Length: 54
Ligand SMILES: [Zn+2]
Image (cartoon, rainbow, N blue to C red; front, side, top):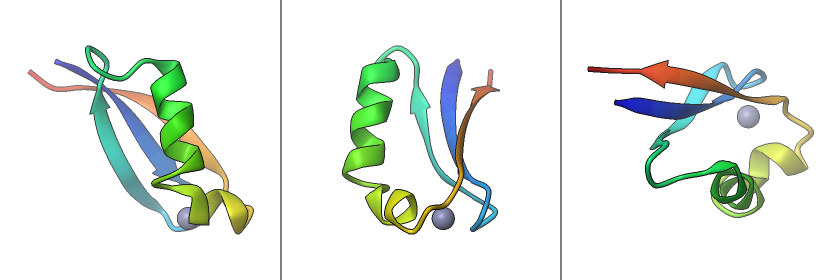
């Protein structure tokens, strides 16, 4: 299975892993504006990387 991993460079932690089947880029962007917005507001650098797990 393939996931999009949302990672905060400043907190040095994974904020969440989202299955690409259910979360497209638009959905991930929505999450950054809602669930993970505190990091964004604090100016943290968020990276989205691919995470593959069998
Ligand atoms: Zn952060």
